[in-house]
Image 1 (cartoon, rainbow, N blue to C red):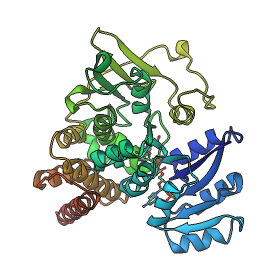
Image 2: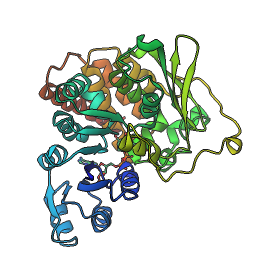
Image 3: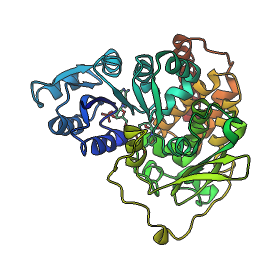
Image 4: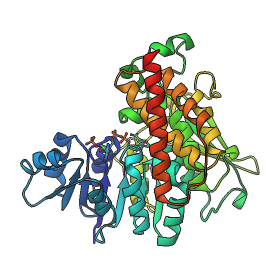
Amino acid sequence: MSAKITILGASGSIGESTLDVVGRYPERFRVFALTGHSRIDVLTRQCQRHMPEYVVVGSQAAAVELKAIIDPGIKVLWGEQALVDAASDADVDIVMAAIVGAAGLLPTLAAARAGKRVLLANKEALVMAGRLFMDAVSVSGATLLPIDSEHNAVFQCLPPDYSGLDHKGVSRIILSASGGPFRTTPLASLAQVTPAQACAHPNWSMGQKISVDSATMMNKGLEVIEACWLFNIAPSKVDVVIHPQSIIHSLVSYVDGSILAQLGNPDMRIPIAHALAWPDRMASGVEPLDLVATARLDFESPDEQRFPCLALARQAATSAQDFPVALNAANEVAVAAFLAGRIGFTEIATTVARVLDDWQGSEPGDLLSVQQADKRARDMAMACLEVTAQC
Ligand SMILES: NC(=O)c1ccc[n+]([C@@H]2O[C@H](COP(=O)([O-])OP(=O)(O)OC[C@H]3O[C@@H](n4cnc5c(N)ncnc54)[C@H](OP(=O)(O)O)[C@@H]3O)[C@@H](O)[C@H]2O)c1
């Protein structure tokens, strides 16, 4: 019997990599549903190749457009409820959660609540609703497997049956970071960098939002919060080290002085294949790492003056639970404004900092309070951007 898979965010970078791996094993995986938002051309090609039962898009207009092109046997749906249904359908075994941003929260949570094998790329779900999400996993018995290359690396380096810090001798988690495209750019030039420069990551090919987050290192900050939830560990026990080659994807430090690392070429098909096959292994289509050609691995500490977003994320991680919601929402608004050419690169961090400075934190007990906090932080970030535009 082949496993049926829903790919949330199929038209994106992770979605395309997932289909590349899944397509190598037609006897093992069957694509059940694909979801995208606006890229109809990509979804059309994917539908022709993988013939899902249904496909979900972001608007009625997009649904009409897609329906006119693809095989009439494929159902076309649109909107948030259709995403939730695709993630929780009783026929689905595996859900790849790869929608970008807060838009991924509801369907990803629905997959966890429905007890699926959840391949988690959408880190925002854990950043925004870590407690709710982890509770849903434990109540439903869902299998949660990290796709972020760093968390997948940590998962591979942890001992079996690990349950939290100090268990089985685990002492620290070390997340590696490339430092992005501006690791050595003079600080005085950062205000002038363009969206195209920010999206030109030196090692990874990714969607625009995560590329900008990598350039500010907000991505690493979000990953610190994600690691705390996934691995039941305090933020103070999660270190970040810059490793410009992106060959070591992360490390686990043990009380006896051992450090275990996972290495590989920077290609997301490796963690995707790992999570699809776990606890077995299967080929991902990625060439094995050539250690001699790699020759050297460098490490440095992140410079907080260059990467203020990392410090902001750490501040949010140690504050009340809705600070990460505010951090994430303000960052999404600021990154969108930067990509649209409305603000400069360095104003991403100043916008997030202003929202956090004014944030009155509380502990969101349910999904509605998470959504309300998200909306409030977005409104505050928009107001900051309007003030910036008037200056
Ligand atoms: N790319 C990587 O290497 C990587 C690595 C680790 C973790 N991640 C995480 O994986 C997630 C996806 O990243 P990505 O790089 O694949 O992003 P991406 O290339 O921008 O793709 C995002 C996907 O989400 C869909 N989408 C956008 N807005 C949506 C909305 N409002 N409702 C429903 N769907 C929406 C997009 O649809 P359309 O394109 O059709 O509009 C697309 O399918 C992010 O959370 C990111 O942090 C990515």
